Image (spheres, rainbow, N blue to C red):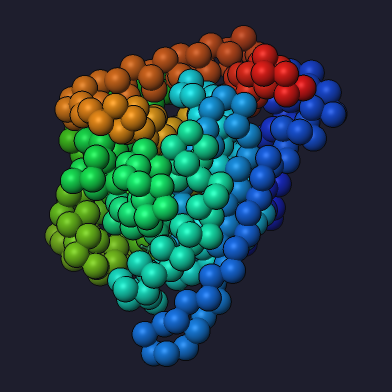
Length: 421
Ligand SMILES: NC(=O)C1=CN([C@@H]2O[C@H](COP(=O)(O)OP(=O)(O)OC[C@H]3O[C@@H](n4cnc5c(N)ncnc54)[C@H](OP(=O)(O)O)[C@@H]3O)[C@@H](O)[C@H]2O)C=CC1
Ligand SMILES: O=C(O)CCC(=O)C(=O)O
């Protein structure tokens, strides 16, 4: 939809910009910045796949491992037609800072394939996933690099990756997280990113004198993260008043049924096709301009940019997506007095529960969902307190820069202790 007009800056430049702001504050010298900004390893593979109509299409697969000072590389697998190496560099670096901010013992990685899964049959998608796994097999491993779902991938894709990896290495559930429950997936992983975001929203609401139960919410993207944010916000008592996906947007001043919308999307419907009392279709601009308390970007990067940030009419932005806000937009939001809870902390719930899944897999043990959710809440609230305290110390410093500072500091400490520099 037309909310996505080209951002003025690439994802990698966005991450680099925030890195330098934090590195300036930490006094990180130039030689270390070069190490911390570049990736440990970048793998690009050719994936020629015979499609069901007999044609061979050559896809490209990527896995970028950014920094492993604090543990095995960790990060999602994205299937999307626009992905490239530069985007994965940015997303992998974000994972490095994110895992450090929430204090789980992982480094950062990200990868995926330049494909449009909506144009592939289930058989083609499985073939592509297996070929991709084979080609990057050498850099994966439960103590080396552990993928998880991201945009357009899910528990089924993780199951195929686990199965393919197992052909050469034996049964290894800890090779991927976000697996189906029947294959040693963790309870609570599917909703974890959104649940973590809602925990942070509740903490942050105090900063803007907002009663979480009375909040109105607009959600951009209604896939895994967005649809769980909708459902969990609704469970909290908040009202979902606008939603968008790639095909269009809807608005419901009195609130819509987030659960029913999630079921509609799960059944293959688009957001714009959702019909219910009081729900009306709106343009991309109208969606962004919806008056609400909380705006949750939960789609792709760079979607809030210099040309549309002025439209937002909310009190808080809580970033479910990775890198949804360009630096120029971030400044505009700050000038408008909008409080931003940044991606590197707001969406970290996914990797936190991935960590729980990995720990359970290493022991072939299982925690119940309540235990998972409680442990997640403890970690997210601690991360919020630490970042908010750092931001306060810096007097006027944003949560984003404070979060990056903490992440970078922890990675530098680990790298120094290991003698990496
Ligand atoms: N899954 C996870 O655990 C985590 C995900 N994230 C981040 O959250 C974001 C969403 O991921 P996830 O929910 O897993 O991905 P999904 O693939 O499940 O959902 C993506 C959603 O974004 C929508 N979207 C895509 N393009 C646009 C557009 N131009 N305008 C509006 N909506 C659009 C899609 O719409 P449509 O269906 O119409 O294409 C879909 O609703 C990503 O940035 C991801 O990196 C961060 C941490 C963890
Ligand atoms: O769960 C994970 O390992 C990674 C999730 C992810 O890709 C992200 O946080 O952006």
